[in-house]
Image 1 (cartoon, rainbow, N blue to C red):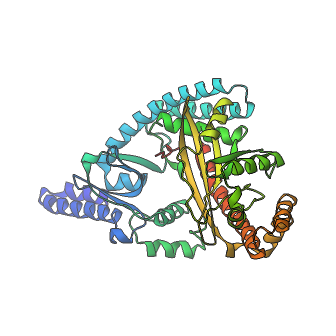
Image 2 (tube, rainbow, N blue to C red):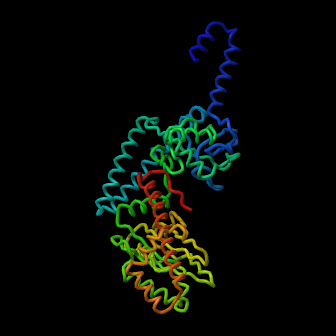
Length: 443
């Protein structure tokens, strides 16, 4: 097409107006092909319109009234749709990437020195330093080298006109479609993309994706984000620190032991009794029993459990005293009624002496109806639980139905815990592959 235009223009200047018209039509069609033909509400990607009228389609990673917006965009789409703006973006991106890699190497070196006695962690950091140094050298020689399929575009608040953000399930479909190289993810409707996925027998709802290794990292991590990254990596590669319990009562879990130790159970019992709950033992057993995997929970029939915003401080003090940078808590969230068990997992990262930050919170629920008979029998026959239930029956505390309900609630709680842990380890795996992967979103 371009050679045809060139030949046409050389024949006669009389053809110039026609040449310009055809060129404009061709250019317009090319741009239109990159923009969605469907309504923004039928897309799987977010729409961002800037104050100068430019439209961008991708997945918004950050949207702040103070700091502006960050959107992940397919690079080929960006280059074809906004070529001039893309060239400016590319030059700035390369410069920022080199600076980010330089600063990141200093951080890695400091981390290496602080943990040089841990061979597994040293191996990870050495590998990261080698990888990033090679990338930096390559980028310094040729700013356009090793361009990743996706790029991040930062747009300040003052340059935004309109923002339309899709639900999370549509972002998930977009990610799966990109993962499987489905065409025109940014410009076609959800129905069209779903048809393509189904034609390839791809169960997009069940499949996971991670595009972090296809994204150019030009943004530096803040100090909080970097401390969170350190905590997550060390949780995986060093000795993990876990706590379980309910309310503000947490008990440390031995990583080499699947269940709570007898001493831990006694400690939990003592703490419960010291909370003036002796008179409400009936409610304790009927609502949230001693569990194989979670210990003892409690439930109040007539009063709502007191919420303590500093419930995690005792765990943080233990972690800080042992120079551990991150810990995981699993808590039973007490319910006043109903047949649902609720579990909350939280991961905390050390920032500086006396200051910790919650990195992620995951909540899961399970119903008594989700529990099968085999699991109920297993709990009933567990030596630790069986002993307590025998004492309860012997003292006439609680009816048989109440005790059975309590055991079923315990089994449901275990299911909720397993679901939360699965979600956490998916999150963990995504953020520890690379020390310079996209910055963690920390509130």
